[in-house]
Structure formats: structure tokens, C-alpha cells
Length: 222
Image 1 (cartoon, rainbow, N blue to C red):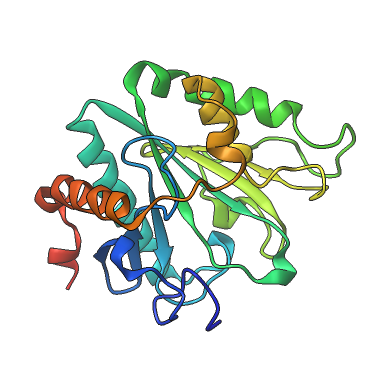
Image 2 (image 1 turned 60 degrees about the vertical axis):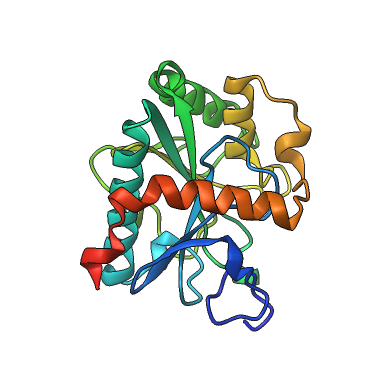
């Protein structure tokens, strides 16, 4: 856990990327080049591996951050998608909920793009249903704990989950690839992290902090 890049108590966490800290979760910007302006991460402060294993208090604070980001981006006339990729549960990697803002007209189309991509992903033959609908139940009640999965939500709407049957065939950047395709970005933007220097990271954090300040949900969460 000391080597974890997302644990708040870890020496590996790049603290200068953090925008806001709640009592259970924190908000940060990516260390590498952001896929879209406003690209950010919501992570639990402690080492949790997936939404399906979260305690109620951590889950509800994550949802509070999510609602706040939706409001913040709405004021910029942007929609956003929230994605989680939980792979190789044995490795016990830290949970990261990624938020990617999109122009409104693309946000409207996002569910169609994601559903199509999930239907076409992975192996031909699957034990589990390809697309799990999250519109009426959240991921914790839709996917059994301990299974690898990809999940996406659209703004405040529940989206889709997909149980990953074959981890060798499922790219860890699947969600980013869908968004990248929608936005016509070049594949190098999501295949591997593109390093960003400290000054650019700092600029990104300050800009995001400026957007976040009027909406900051941690002020009332204390």
C-alpha cells in the first residue's frame, strides 16, 4: 500500500495534483496529459479497490462529488461521463472513478456509443450478460463483489456495466478509447500516459481549482 499512487497516506501520491479533500474521498487531476480539459479523478482516501466493495459512507461521498462535478460542468455547458475500470482483482489496485467532460451534443450521444462498444467488446461467448443496465440500480447491486468489470454513468444518470470475462482481451483504456473515438482524438492520447511537466500540471490544478471553488462540496461536508 505504501507504493500505491492513489492512497492519500502514500509517499507515491503526487499531492500537488489534488484539488479537494473530503472526509472519505478526494478529487485530483491526472498526472499525465488530460484527455479532455477538465478530466479528473475521484478516489477514496483509503485503499479500496472497487465501487462494488465500498462502504456506504465512502460511496455516498463519492456520489456527492459526482453531483458537484455535474453541476460545475453544466455551468460550462458541458456533460460528463464517469467511468470505472476494475481489472485483475488479485492485484488489489486502488479504485479510480474517472470523470471526462464532453460537449453537450456529444454527451447526448455517449450512451449510444458506449452501449455499442460494450456489445462489440471482449470475446464472442460470454457467461454474463454483455450489458448490465445501471439506470435503476447502482453498480453495487448490479455486479457481484470480486468480479472484474467496466462501468460508465452519464452525468447523474445511471449508465451501463460490463463484467469482464477475458481480461487479456479487454483493454484497460476501453472507456477512454470510446470517448477518444467520439472526440476524434488520436489513439496515443489514451493508449499510454503521456508525461506532463510540473509547470503544466500546476497550471491544470490551479485552473480546475478555480472552477471548483464556487461549487466546493467539501466546505459543507466538514
